[in-house]
Image (cartoon, rainbow, N blue to C red; front, side, top):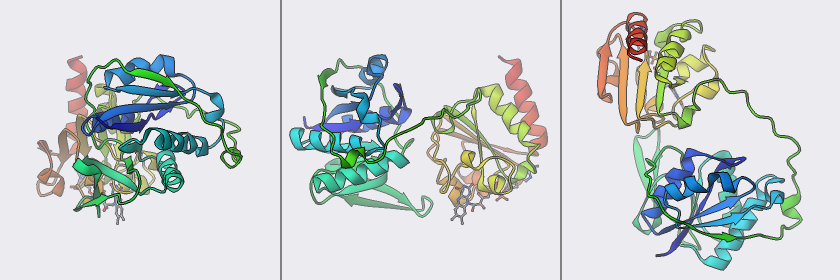
Length: 316
Ligand SMILES: Cc1cc2nc3c(=O)[nH]c(=O)nc-3n(C[C@H](O)[C@H](O)[C@H](O)COP(=O)(O)OP(=O)(O)OC[C@H]3O[C@@H](n4cnc5c(N)ncnc54)[C@H](O)[C@@H]3O)c2cc1C
């Protein structure tokens, strides 16, 4: 089967969930060949095997991660030239999309970004206008380079014993034009990262104020969940913008999404509608969110949320 290169998204050896999603997607269309760039491979190799990498290209040279994105595009371009993969998949993150663009120029290929699924023939599916329209696009020149949105594919384990091959690239001067001079680790609380969490509890305008968000946090903590928010809540300054879920916020696809005091506008749905199980708490039985839910509670969140937290805590 043809090889499909998957750029591993990791931070100092800690592999991001999106990599497992990309490996799962790649396996549907060929042999998934992970491309590891930078240090930390030894601690992560088992995870790549667990999600079915048939091969891992390991470029461990620290120089490759000492500069901003360009070296990664140069290494991938070299692999594309030498191995002629059927496609290259990267995560549609800020960095991933920049790598995809640079790689497309270097390999004279077409690029698709923000893809949510890949069909036969490497036809990329896009979800546009807040999820109300699905469009399909196909690269017509070179190697399809496809940036896939995190959380659009459910990762499936498929244990393998990947072959390993050490690779390197001689960087051009242009690739060394911007050096990373400092990395600051963002302070993280106890809660899981929003886009990687198995459970997300989000609050909306119905929460009524910044202080009341502690109800959402308490419910989230009782479940070991991440906290999200609607744009109405973040625009009001009740919760930071980095926690906004939706078209102009983060896309999440957890096992369980609990929407509290959120009406279910199309722009909010765009960021959470692929969640496996959706629960809403809303006092308005006509709220559009109820069209989408698996379980709906019509009630006042100030009564329902604390009771739910109490009940979950009792059962632990
Ligand atoms: C270009 C564009 C991009 C956008 N991007 C995003 C985005 O990324 N994410 C996003 O979320 N929105 C986005 N929006 C905004 C979106 O259209 C909605 O305005 C927003 O999602 C509404 O947030 P909400 O559901 O919290 O508020 P509302 O729509 O005001 O809903 C509040 C809900 O709370 C319920 N409620 C009130 N009090 C209680 C109570 N005591 N108990 C239970 N329920 C109660 C109400 O019945 C109501 O259903 C975008 C809009 C535009 C135009």
